[in-house]
Image 1 (cartoon, each protein chain N blue to C red):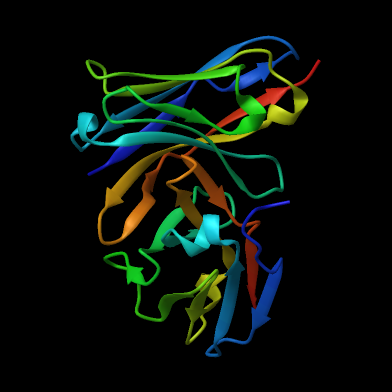
Image 2 (image 1 turned 30 degrees about the horizontal axis):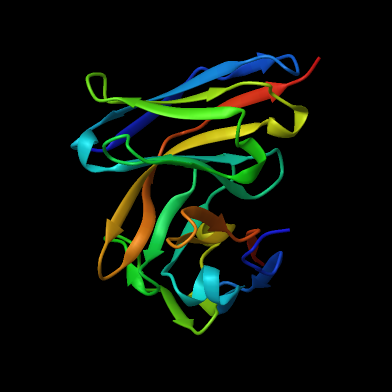
Length: 110
Length: 122
């Protein structure tokens, strides 16, 4: 069981919008920054969002992140079939010197 | 461009040892903390270990403490994960990742290697 909780799966049609949630505690999310990673099937994870809401250079603005209290969200608009992947939230708990990842959310674009 | 290339994976019997290597290039190796993150078959990501930019600090997830060690060689731009007393639960793809810390945006893993598969089985 992960310290960061994500829904196992989400789905939507091409062109639609999805929101992936990531919930935790004050010692995980509350006091630290959240980052989001995309893992396409059979490949290594790639950084998408860092510092709660900063898009990595080259990431389309269809992807956005936010954080409020002990929860964070990843929004993806204008869904494309190429967005089908598993998305993970992550954080570095600086007070504990430990990294945490959510369990991952598999996105299906119907 | 930044590259992280893992090697050393393979099949090993329970209780035996294995050492993973991660060769880094395309950046100032001595400026960054380096991490190992693993992914069991069909499962999610699990953070395993970190070594600070100068090797002075090392931290591990509880399940590997006392069995795994992490080290780095700045002359070879390489980080290592020595895994002793391996268990079947350690079977996973092990990724090397660069840690980036910024005052304004916190800590995140900005580059990842392609991974090395470790299978612990008799």
